[in-house]
Length: 67
Image (cartoon, rainbow, N blue to C red; front, side, top):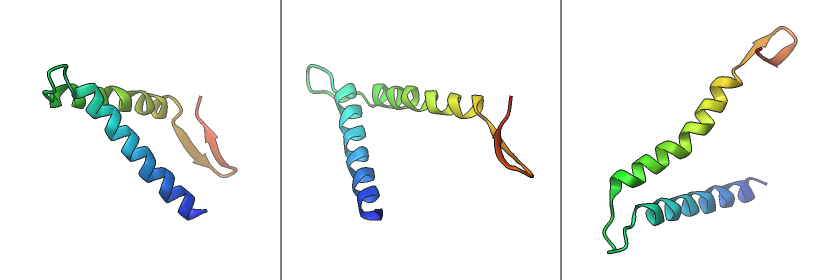
């Protein structure tokens, strides 16, 4: 199972990098790293917002979602 997880992590990283390079490459084959950084910030903003919205805490009975 861990081999499958490691493989999927490698494939996910490669696909993510390919997507960022595709977003950053302009029609004249010039790379604008600012666009790549803004794209990655935008992609990471949604999970961060979800994590804040679903902030979990632990009580005596286990993990529960805060309301």
